[in-house]
Length: 247
Image (cartoon, rainbow, N blue to C red):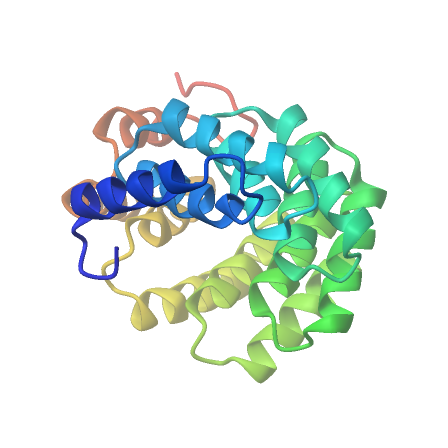
């Protein structure tokens, strides 16, 4: 598996499982087999492997997090949440489980539950900047702009080279119509990651919103050059800040 010889690894794992088919230790082999299938994008096969492993060891945390992650990939959020709840009942401090469950709660607009998981995770891992930025975005979406801005400020203070922190704070300034401050932050993000198409889209939307259309078009064009969807960028260029098509 480490050498990416996935077919050979699959064959060896299958041989090992056939030696003692009912052995509970095979749960680990099912985990490896599922990981091989995930890497091969054989999602249904991976799901069966993880489920077979859990039938042998129902409280195996690695299998639970792997199956939950696969469910998220397959857009089965409800099933992912079932596995994550089970995992976090076994181990309330499982950091990856907390991060995934908070994500699902946020998608389901269960903001209080999502916030609780993010805050628990940050307590366990104060240096987890992804959790901190997710909490800032959550608070912005939950009409807590002051908390969101304070959290973004902390992220930039401690991780000044983290481009996502700058782009998120720029978006928060934009929501407040502090366009000059938003532009400063987005420029900084682009200087740190000049090949990130999403950042040009964000700045293009900002330029569009205060009527600098030529600069907006240039940013959307650059985003397309870097791999962004041309149709999406064209649609964004024609949409105003209220979500309506420009006439």
